[in-house]
Amino acid sequence: AKEKGKNTYVVYNEGLLDEAMQEYKLEADLRNAIDHKEFVLHYQPQIDNQTGELAGLEALIRWEHPKLGLLPPGAFIRLAEQNGLITQIGEWVIEEACRQQREWHDQGRKNVTVSVNLSTQQFLNRNLTNFIEQTLQSHGGSPDWLGVEITEYMAMEYEQSVQVLEELKALGVGLSIDDFGTGYSSLNHLKNFQIDFIKIDKSFIQEVTGDHNDAIIVEAIITLAHNLEMKIIAEGVETADQLGFLAHHHCDISQGYLFSRPLPPKEITKEWLK
Ligand code: C2E
Ligand code: CA
Ligand code: CA
Ligand code: CA
Image (cartoon, rainbow, N blue to C red; front, top):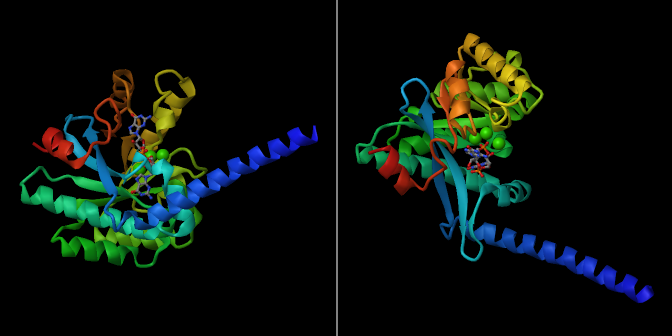
């Protein structure tokens, strides 16, 4: 029994060590990923429900890891938040979105806003608005090239958020509240901010044609947002039935696999910005 116990202990410990090593390795790799140009932005189309036309693009980061292949943000964003690398990564995202917009602009492509996701640390960084302004300027872009997405938690939890959102608004970039409905805030609290878009979380959209309660919640969010002069984006729209429900209830914009997965820039250019 002692022997077995010992083995178990060793195995358990090896497992832990393995995990720690993996993380250590990933962290070391992450430190070099920017310099080695391993990050890419994919873009997911956002569709105007009334016209069926492209209304915007959401930029979603991926890591082209030399050994592990294409990694989704779920595999490294938390680590980057823990070790502070997220600041640099976040700045790269804004820089790359502006560079890409410049390229599309020079090619005479249809002009749409690219929305980037902000991490909490980025949002609370006092240099954020300045950085966005400078980066837009250095690419000869205008504020309507960019939108930012923050979670409702970020908007509600921090005292500074009123000021940051006012600064961003004054600069002229679009403001979206991401994953709406998953936090504890209400639209009533958000009315103090000049929010352009509310993005209803995909967990509600996925049940909207099956779950009566989710249908009622989505309807209520749409109505209230419209009364507060905000537009509604539905995320995770996968079926024609979901789209039918959303269009019927005057949801403004849809985003999801029904229209397109997030795509590399070349495919966006080819299929959406012809
Ligand atoms: P999010 O901002 O809520 O982004 C939407 C996620 O839903 C994306 O996952 C997207 O690929 C996925 N999605 C889109 N349409 C559908 C659909 O129809 N069905 C389903 N099931 N999923 C759909 P992704 O790209 O893996 O990103 C995950 C999260 O990582 C994002 O959630 C965002 O919070 C974060 N993230 C992505 N890019 C960045 C970034 O540049 N910076 C920061 N700080 N976070 C990022
Ligand atoms: Ca988002
Ligand atoms: Ca979201
Ligand atoms: Ca989400």
